[in-house]
Image (cartoon, rainbow, N blue to C red):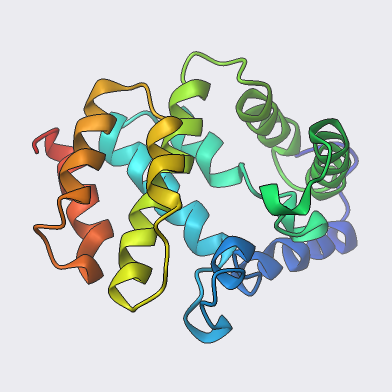
Length: 196
């Protein structure tokens, strides 16, 4: 168990994390995607963790990606348009993560995973950040198919990539030779087969 766990605090942490299923990604809302079809933070975290698994099979990376947005359950989804100082954002998210993990089983280990992601201190942390940004580019294709202007996401995501295979996969996806509604399915297949 974790630091001084009690079941009331554990239930509070679970309720807090459950909010990620209803917390909509603000970047999509800001571009006119209605809440009823907007990706949630939980959906995003699941897709990014799945991408990490398909690409590497590394469960440490999958764990890191699974928890990377947990603080948003308390802090909300802060986007670059919010102009929040990065140090303030990190401090707020660090305090939120402490609050969430203090009473859950293996909370210390989960906090370590989050810090490795946040501080880019583990060997796979840079790859985790690339997969996080690339997921937005893949989701943008889905929303483009529904008629929303997501064009700014493509150069933004591409600029964040330096893994040559991820670059080639994203370039192939941007050719739009697949049904855009199936962009994640196609992406996951390309990650697992390393074929494009």
